[in-house]
Amino acid sequence: MDSRPIGVFDSGLGGLTAVKKLIQLLPNEDIVYLGDTGRVPYGSRSRETIVKYAREDTAFLLSQNVKAVVVACNTASAAAWREICAMSQEIPFYNVVTPASLAAASATQNGKIGVIGTVATVRSGAYERALALTGKARAVIQVAAPLLVPLVENGRTSPDDVVVSTIVREYVEPIVRAGADAVILGCTHYPLLRAALARAFGGDVALIDSAACTAETLARDFTANGQTGSALPGTRRYFVTDSTEGFSEMASRFLESDLTGEIAQISLEEAPEIKHKLGG
Amino acid sequence: MDSRPIGVFDSGLGGLTAVKKLIQLLPNEDIVYLGDTGRVPYGSRSRETIVKYAREDTAFLLSQNVKAVVVACNTASAAAWREICAMSQEIPFYNVVTPASLAAASATQNGKIGVIGTVATVRSGAYERALALTGKARAVIQVAAPLLVPLVENGRTSPDDVVVSTIVREYVEPIVRAGADAVILGCTHYPLLRAALARAFGGDVALIDSAACTAETLARDFTANGQTGSALPGTRRYFVTDSTEGFSEMASRFLESDLTGEIAQISLEEAPEIKHKLGG
Image 1 (spheres, each protein chain N blue to C red):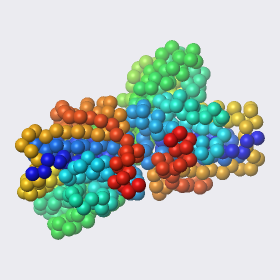
Image 2 (tube, helix red, strand yellow):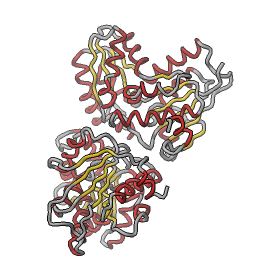
Image 3 (cartoon, rainbow over the protein chains, first blue to last red):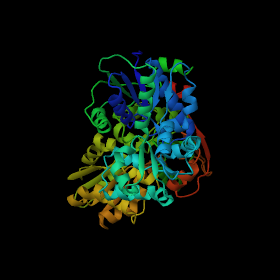
Image 4 (cartoon, rainbow over the protein chains, first blue to last red):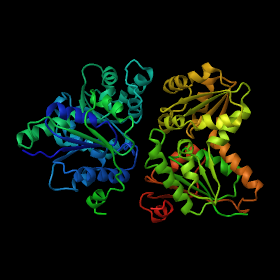
């Protein structure tokens, strides 16, 4: 038994879809979530900046004495994984790329796998490498879809919205044309567009939710290894780098339930315990 | 004569539309531009975070020995003006809100003025206050238009794009319904959508470019006061907080010409001269 909390971070609030799944699978775990809302989005920034921000996020979670770090952010998982893992040898790190790639490899029949992600995720080539390692991917069709996050953040997710359907159709067109039968939703915002994506892909394409796959992997590992926590219901603490105002409302959209737990704002640049972890 | 450079900052690259106008009007001036590309956008963040970032941007320009600071960012102009001005008594500061409000007051016949801006700009009420001071505004209709910046940043500006026309039409509808005859484009990205906006508003509405108005005001002041620089063509230096990769290409879109001048990446959080200006 290990009663320390599980740490989860994302650039914004999309990683709460991983928290939702973790709460379902491991209701007794304490969870510390960090959303870098003062600097979101990451997906349009350079690798160098993504690494810097991801290291600060990780340092914060390490300062909270977590027993694992879940990098719920696809962009950070894809572009900064090596640098994140180098920050501690003592706890396990989970990215979203590997579990989603394994799930896609299981789901595909024809070996053609699509990936939708941010500009930085696609540029990193991380999904291509992870899918190649599964030995099941004959072709990987990657598409950068930079407008999907703004759509979700502005509450535009309905498949009947002409703006949503037009943009989604444009993005997925190369994947549909290639005949992929499994598609990785390589950003924690995209599951909120599932209905629009399903309509654009047609019924026979498996849509892989990267955050959910990661939560499942962690839950399996922790249960198998006896690393789960107490028998009491877990508590949750949510930290953000911008104001906490409006956080509950937006967070509830991703959690698909009311948010309970402490909410606080922190400064990643100034906290001494973070500087210490970064060796500064 | 004052040979120091003019400082201009924006959250990202939109403020280059102000630089473009300054170069036209005052070709001999040296210009230092700062785009906080590592933390763009500002318009969806809290006032507290906008103030923090805007003060760091201003501190950087002050460290460059500028003779004026142009706050080309509408969000910072609207939400952090008082805090920015408090940073120096020695040089003039220019925001985009006042010049655009004066221009709208001159343009309107019926006293009904529309304002399109970011969430933070609209929330601040800065345009309402500035327009009230002109004595010409009988009604101010404000609309927050959070999807316009992502559209422009992804190169979607054509009025024939159904995504652009649908979103623009939705946003401007309350302004059209109210019968406004002058509309302030309260974000430096919006002039790139001028064709789509003009079509949605119809021909008789004056569209006010806030950055261009500000450049004109500064040029008039500096010429009148003999504060212009040398008789030689001015030089330009561009600073960004994310990688400089891809900067020239994106910047050329806003400058509507090839970019010439030095380009460099800086870190606002770590530079000692900035900490000094912030009193840290």
